[in-house]
Image (tube, rainbow, N blue to C red; front, side, top):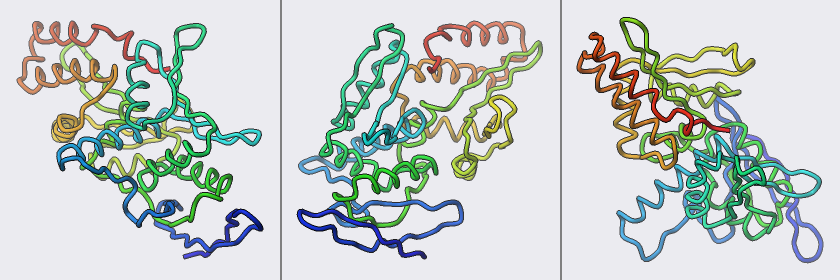
Length: 295
């Protein structure tokens, strides 16, 4: 463990505090302990039933997973930029993000093709946003960006070290797949290959996913210097389907998933071995491909 001294700003002169950095076998990560917040409690839902609290927590993990896949978190020329972009045809996802986080605004660009969710530079909103993603980030890239954000506005935080834990028991993976995943159906003359794949610059998060949903990971030639996770076995596909039945997609990816699932079921029944079955799969899979593409 490493002790790092971080300056915390108060009304008056700066005061230094010590933050305890822990290193795991994959990469360094940071969890922030907000003032008045106990370790392990990122958000408290009061006045709600257990079922409602669970649903809200699932929504939050989905939103964070989607943000890690599609979101921007950076500091440029002394300002904080936190945003996400989607095709306007999928703008409902951005409104969903806005509702779940309770932050930001959604705006259609001038060309009408793309829309953005932006948090803005209000520090109180940034504090709330960090409180929501605190301890729930999985990827190395977003954790490092969060560290830089802490350094930039550390007057509001008392750093506490830890990391998010990837699990089947929340909606983070659905959000991440919705942002960066692909559901593939490859139709050949006498067979059909059905897969789920995810491409990333960093291999770490794919290794974590592969531990839960076994598949294969390799260095991708296109795009260059990326890694690709792919799973196509019936067992792993079934595990993914069971997971997605608990944590649903919320945007256009759900349209693609419904078609992908229909194709999977036809293959499970062995009907893909017939010309009629192949034709049925081709008809299902080629419908509406233009509305599920990501920017």
